Length: 190
Image 1 (cartoon, rainbow, N blue to C red):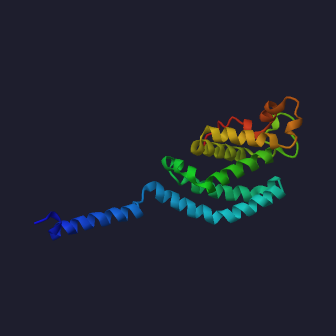
Image 2: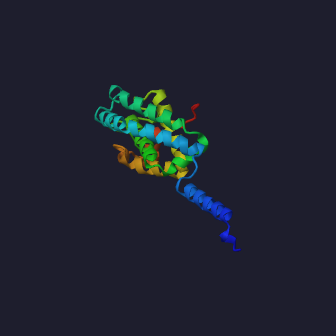
Image 3: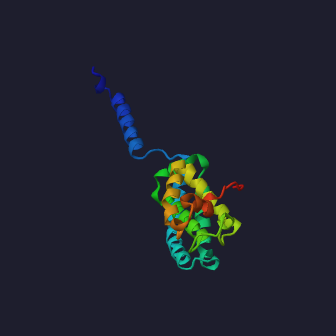
């Protein structure tokens, strides 16, 4: 009698192959995949308000024009923080996450800078309040945690030359750095 002629062995082998196919096409849900799934759904519902308030803030770059943007950004960050620290590194592949972090950091930098360079490093925060500077620092922390220090360095080298009037500063990029929000030490409790 051959090995595959026994019905019990056929059934066990069929179940094993079936289970392997199910696991391959539908991997088990981990804590991280569940948290990231909830986060992604929540952020998708906030993208439209984010874009709308971002455009309004760019159009009216003063405290009153950006309140709604700060509120929506805060809601997105709350959702982001619901993803455990051990799972946040898995968001590196998520383009939506990188986008809202980078766009928000760019806007904070431009708002603090203004239409012309601040007169000195003492005015690097522009009209931003401390809570908004801390939010910028949290975004910086997220960028560095998820994408690495090189992502922060790339962001800085990309935005510094684009700041209005930064090219005209006598001491070049170092002076632009010192006068920008980017130079904030970000040593606030988070």
